[in-house]
Image (tube, rainbow, N blue to C red; front, side, top):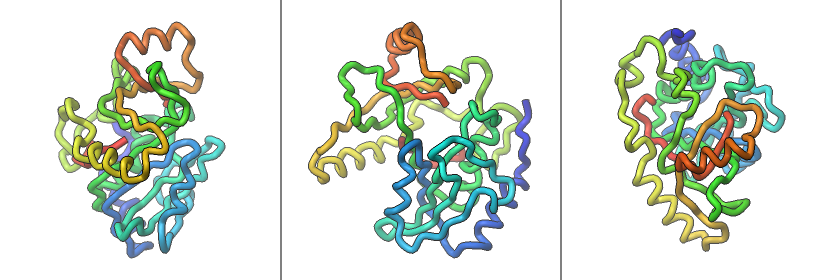
Amino acid sequence: MENEFTYEDYETTAKWLLQHTEYRPQVAVICGSGLGGLTAHLKEAQIFDYNEIPNFPQSTVQGHAGRLVFGLLNGRCCVMMQGRFHMYEGYSLSKVTFPVRVFHLLGVETLVVTNAAGGLNPNFEVGDIMLIRDHINLPGFCGQNPLRGPNDERFGVRFPAMSDAYDRDMRQKAFSAWKQMGEQRKLQEGTYVMLAGPNFETVAESRLLKMLGADAVVQGHAGRLVFG
C-alpha cells in the first residue's frame, strides 16, 4: 500500500495555509470528541473550514466541526483541529494522518493529541485525565501503519524508535500544571490501545486488552514532540 499523497501534495496544502494566514504555529492540537470547545481559548482566532483547504479530508462524525483554527494561547501561536478523521469513516491512514505532515511543514514543533477514551484500568474513574506514556497499535500488528509505503526522509527516518514516543518533559509539565490548577480532577498516566472501530469492545475483548497492559482504549512521526 503506497501513500496516496506526494510530498508536493502536503506542500501545496501548507503553502495555501501560509498564504492565507500570518500565523506561524509552534504547537498543534488535535481536538477529540467533545473537546472542540478548546478552540474558544484561542485569542484572535482565524478559522478555515476543511472544505476550503486543498487536499484536506472532511469530517463526517457528529460533533466534529471540521475546522482548522489558528490563534494565540498564552502568547504562543497555535493551530487546532476542530474535528479529526478516523479509519472507521473509510479513510486510509495516509488521509487520517495527512494534517500531521502538513503541520510539520508549517513549522509545528509540538503536537498535542486529545480524545475521549474508555477506561480499562479499575483505578480510573469517569472524567479522569490520562497522559499517554505508551501505546499499543493493534491494527499495526496487521500491517495498518501510517508509515507503511515508500519513506520520505523529509518527514522522518525509515525505522523510527517507539520506545519513548511520548515526550517525558511534556508529561512532567502537564503534572506541574495540574497541581497549579488545584487537582480538581485526577490526572492519571497509562498505556493507550487503539482498535479500528467503529464498534465498542466486547467484554471479552476488554479483558484481553487489560491482560495486554492497556489502561485506556479507543477506536479509531516527523520528529515532533508528541503529547497525549
